[in-house]
Amino acid sequence: MNYITRNLENVVSQVTKEYPVVLVTGPRQVGKTTMLQKLMEGTDRGYVTLDDLNERNIAKTDPELFLQLHKPPVLIDEVQYAPELFTYIKMQVDKNHEPGAFWLTGSQVFKF
Image (tube, rainbow, N blue to C red; front, side):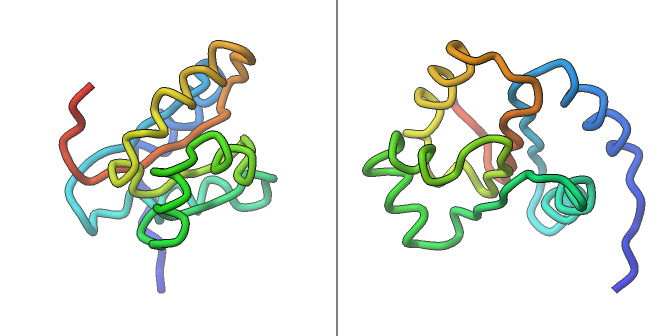
């Protein structure tokens, strides 16, 4: 498979140095996850998808445990499936304020 370079890569790389959370949203199947996985190659960033029903269940029922299992820096894919995570991500960011700690993707409209 040939990877298609995206203009957004530079933006993600820059804001990752400044902000603890980067959320990439958009329609399904446009390459959000593929782009972020390409950018995280050679780094220590972890990856978890909430398409996995076991991971989703942990994220929804025990978000604190989920974040202990998936420590930053981490890419959480399809985060919209567990909105319960947002409060715990905020608490961790408020405590540590580590740039680039969380990369999140979602393909649905978020209601904050």
